[in-house]
Image (cartoon, rainbow, N blue to C red; front, side, top):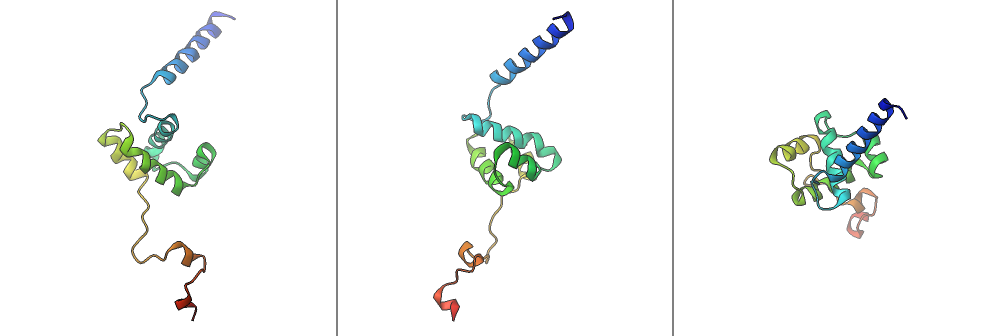
Length: 113
């Protein structure tokens, strides 16, 4: 190993050590990973659906739900929360939206006729 390779090796070791000892934004590792991923993509308007699926195995809607479950327990600053809010708006069911069972065609007896 020459001096250049050794220097690169030491840089990689140091980067791994810094990453492992960085203060987490959430008490649980997976939560911190999800928040960090969301924060990384926030300046670009949020993560693409394909990236979310590859990294977390969930849909964009589920990712956003999980993110907003984690935010209250996290140590994110107000600026970070504001950035995440603009990139990942909370999905709420609009008023008058039919319940899920109606969307699947499972109508109640009164509506069947």
